[in-house]
Image (tube, rainbow, N blue to C red):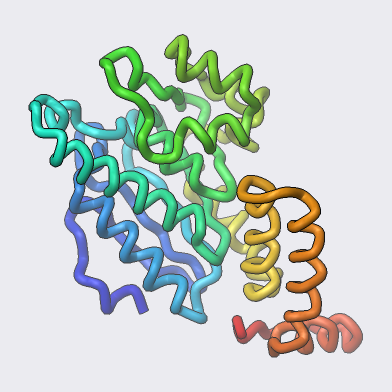
Length: 264
């Protein structure tokens, strides 16, 4: 279905079964542009409407750069209007990714800096290759993370490490990233995509409808009080009875067969 969207030269998109693979294609450092950010936002919207799509993988063909974020030449001006447009493009794209209804996986292959790390933070799962390094170095050049990074990082690894990375500019290598929970797994060089595909295959065993509801509940803790989330959990549990996937999942278990999800 995403083939209906006009293609971008900066992001390569491939469909393998129920998985959409998005590969950075802006060498040498795979920096973001307003065009690629807007394309990502549109792509997520299209995937959310595609009942055959269950997961999304973000990766790079380069073992040196996953993404270095923004090209600083884009900020070498005095036009606040342009700065607002670029920050809005970052925020809009990564917020859309965070709200993607399927399972999103960042397969980090090298340096993930600034907006390159922020896009990974907006994914549900992050894995990295052993040579990867991650940082939010914006304050070192008089800027700050504007793609949800200051919020996402704190939620994922805690305020202490978030402050070390953002306020002190610390760069985190792969083993430390796994230790502090920035990534869930470190894999050998050249294997991030294959591992991400294996994780995406696990997502295919889950009801897509249930996954979407579960994601909204997990994220609710960031957006409201815990008591409201408790009530929402019960509400969405009952709402599953309006879906075909609920009936199929239970029937398949009882009948000892693999479920055939309809994503509705």
